[in-house]
Every structure is written in C-alpha cells, then in structure tokens.
Length: 83
Image 1 (spheres, rainbow, N blue to C red):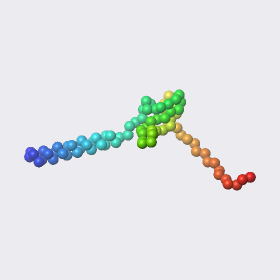
Image 2 (tube, rainbow, N blue to C red; image 1 turned 90 degrees about the horizontal axis):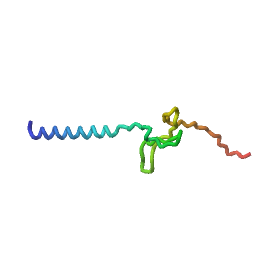
Image 3 (spheres, rainbow, N blue to C red; image 1 turned 135 degrees about the horizontal axis):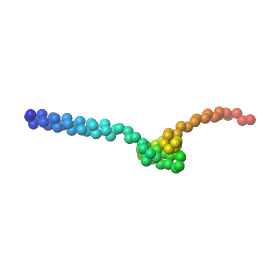
C-alpha cells in the first residue's frame, strides 16, 4: 500500500471518528430523579440551561414517581361594556 493510500485511509478513519462523536453527543439525556429540584410533592425537572437561566419542566410526585404537570386552561370572557 502506497503512502498516499495509507494517508487517505487515516483521514477517512479520523473523519468517521469525528462523525460518530458528533452523533453520540447529540443524543438527548434521559432525566433522572436526581435532576429534580423539589419540595415534598412538587418539583422542577432540570433539562438544561440557556444563557438566561435554567430550562426544565414542572413535575408532581404521584405514587413516588415524578410526572409532568398538566395545566388546565380556562378562558375568561373579556368585555368592554360597563354596567
């Protein structure tokens, strides 16, 4: 095998290592209970941070496990008429 062919193989191998590293680091991390900042029954699951602060989800404890909180949306009628 010539020197040029060996160099090409090494370059292709190095590029494949970088590609695998990028793909592996892009996989999302699964949240665990240790990442929940909490009180007794309500908490905040930390999922990461941005420039302006932490990012996450509000969670509640149900039967010992953390579950994402679901919010009910209520609509209020807005009127401009004064009585």
